[in-house]
Image (tube, rainbow, N blue to C red; front, side):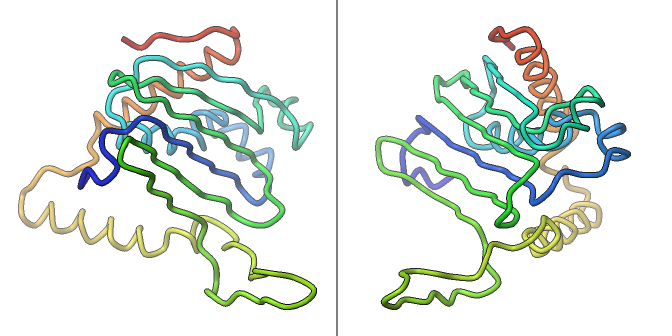
Length: 195
């Protein structure tokens, strides 16, 4: 927002869950693109504005039962924003080292990076290892607890003050349309135009 890196040219978003959800959840989730990757589509729009094109690859590499339910558990999605910026999203339903959530935004003026959160900031350095630290936080509740509290506070303030909320319904709808396009892309092997 401050323009520190200039207009966005390239973004990389990584989201990996510690373990696949149960089959009952997958059955009703709407699939990887609508359940998990949709949050990254929302982030992509926040960073780059409207999305013009979607190209997705997806596979079943984690849990064979996911395929039996008609879903996938791993994906790479490339987006082209209307501005020309490129966004690459990678998701997996398995990450043995915890809840992996990272983002990188790159422009002519430099790069911004937000990495994983850890239970402590302590690192261990010695003859046998360098930079060893605790594993990343285990799941989204721990990772985003403070963000959820801030969102709830913002919602209450908007209601009390009669202000419009952001994000709003249209933001959610746009993320869903990108998710639908990504689903179509990986099933057909084609780039999907949203413009």
